[in-house]
Amino acid sequence: MNYTENVKDQKDKYLLLRAGNIILWIFVITTAIAVWHYVPVLYRMIRDRDASHLWELLLVTGAEFLVFWTGIIIVYLTSRQLGFKTRLLGIVFGMIPLANLIMLITILRITGKEAKTELARCKLNRLRASEHVCQTKYPLLLVHGVFFRDFKHFNYWGRIPDELMRNGAVIYYGEHQSAASVDDSARELEQRILRIIRENGYEKLNVIAHSKGGLDIRTALAKTSVAPYVASLTTVNTPHRGCEFADYLLNRIPEAQQQAIANTYNSAAAKLGDPNPDFMAAVTDLTSSACSRRNETVRDVPGVYYQSIGSVLAKPSAGRFPLNMTYHLVNLFDGKNDGLVGEKSFLWGSDFKMLAASGKRGISHGDVIDLNRENFDGFDVREYYVQLVSDLRQKGF
Image (cartoon, rainbow, N blue to C red; front, top):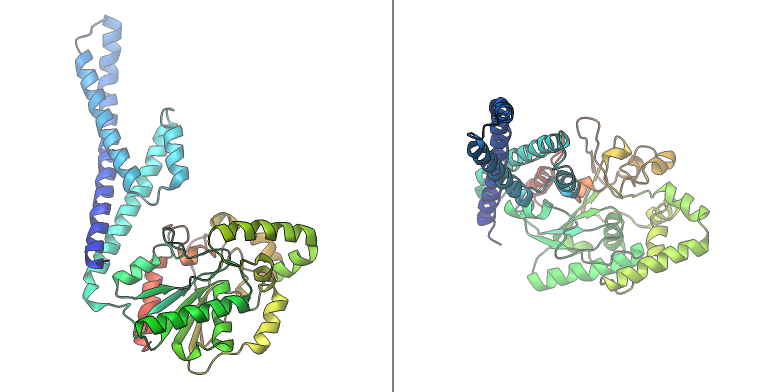
């Protein structure tokens, strides 16, 4: 993809979104003026049975109708932040007085902010295009966490990869199974890394791994042949010390129920492309006890730069379903958490960064990889990764 052209396409898209937003504001303002002016006229027409202004009223109503539908169609087609819920509520309440006004103001607020944010991002990328701030010495390998796959049409990492590539990065993906033991995932990643190195002639790779993916690649570095081909490892919200709530659940849920859940998941994962999914092995390897045993033998490899990132939610309602469902349970066993992993489990390597968002929201397990493609105040996930990769570049990786 030509990312110079891509930035222009992005700019054109959000200029169109801004135009749609402006058109809807024109509708709001002109409708308010029309109501103020024509309500007395309509009253006199009814009182005096005078139809002399009827065509004028119909013309104004038709014009307002045209302006509204032009604006609403544009923002519905171009906005990424409205989301399914807001779009649906906009349709449902569209014909209900007052409720439709509230929904319209909500839509205007969301799309106006989105257009402003994205146009500013397009400008920033255009200004630094020649700097290639994410053009690291070694390409990036992005490694997903448990219960997800690297799908072609739904990127696990949201808008992050495109943003990195616009700024010069070369990116590959782990492409390992969604659920397997850490050791099995490590062997899959070994084969993936060796294939990338062999087919492209790279000397090394920089690995960024999320959640269980951090455990998988740490194990691959320590137990397989890939260590000479990895320059750096950045783990993102990885449960290096496991999840105590997982130990609790495995001890409380009857084995028959565990196996029923595992069989259902394994069957579905196999249909989606996993050659040998193993739900129970993946879950068991995320327990605190399993991670404690693993940390005794899986040591950091000299010559590889290790760093880690973590984040926490301020409250469960701030996160998105389903990655916020276990917040209270995790909090009971692991303390402050991102919805799945406790903060004490994140730290690994020579450098650690605890991400923070201003306000009362926090940053969830999904937010930190842009899983929901959601803009929110206090944390720009795409720019954070640009700066993260730029820092790797400055460090010589």
